[in-house]
Structures are given as structure tokens and as C-alpha cells.
Image (tube, rainbow over all chains, first blue to last red; front, side, top):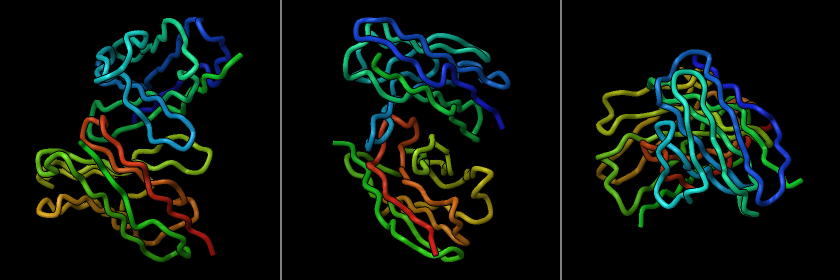
Length: 107
Length: 114
């Protein structure tokens, strides 16, 4: 099983600041890495797929980068609605795994 | 409008069974692989199972393999998850998601408790 480790566990920032979230895989997943946003009581929402492709309707302030074992989700300028939990997910094979999540909270 | 709606959740005792359904609308289920993902209270996301568009490939997460069965009825545009030998640790919100996980249902809650 491929283990995904996200850091930090919690990130405290203010609106307008830049957020950088990391995801490290226990072995290479090539570029088969996705990012999701989840707000309380809601289903996850796909933000980024294949490491750097924004999903339909996702604002340009969200960007993804990386390949192999190290990946980054960047939110260029935080909006109030961006404070949520973010998960990375790998699908390099049929056995999908998620990271444990990063909670992005308002400072 | 592409939509997934889960149903079948409830409160059950340990050791019993439950079948979840996921009704798809706005797209053809038979053209897509489908997933079940769950989330225990206050915890992160856990992938449960996947079935390919034609049912020929099926895979399970370690924690449910041998107890849960994913299946689909393309004629009804519906995905299923048969859950047997339920345990307290299976308590979670269960989501179905389209192949690329770009579409999710709102989830159905399963509580396993004596």
C-alpha cells in the first residue's frame, strides 16, 4: 500500500496570504496525484488531478505541482471560502489511498 | 445534471449486513468505473472499493476485503455495496464517486453499534 503523508497537519493563515500544502508518497506515484477540498458536512470536491490539472470550475488561485513522491498544492491568495480540510490522493494503481489531511484554518 | 445519490444507510448491530445503493443520473453508469469511499466520524477519507465500467475489474481496501462486495446494475444505473460481518469500525459516512472522483454523492451514514 502506498502511504501518503501530508504536512503540515494544521495550517493557520489569514485571507490574502499564500498557502502551501505538501504531500509525500512512500513510493513513486508518477503524476497520479489528486487534491480534494472538504468542508464540514459536505462531500469532497476535486481540485487538482494528475498533479497539476485544475478540475472543471476550480479557480486559478489553486495550483498543483510535483511528480514521483513529492507534491504541492498552492493557493495563491486565500479567500474566506478556502478554509477547509485538504486531502491528497494517489491512484497510480487500482489500490487508491488518501493522505490524512491538512486543516487550513483562519489565523 | 450529473448526480449521485446514496441510500441504504442506517443503524445496525455488529455482525449483521447492510446493502448500500448509489443511483446515478445525468450520465451513463455503464461508461464509468465507480468507487466507494468512507469517512469515519471526525476522521479522514478512506477508499473502500472500485469497480470498472463493465465489472471486470474489482478491487478492495485492506480493511473491507472479504467482507464487502461492490457491484453494479447498469440497466438500473445503480451501484451497490454489500456489507457483511459489520464491525464498529465500519461506522462512517459512505460516499459513491464517479471514476475520476470528479462527482460525489452526498453520502449515507452507517452506524454499527450494539
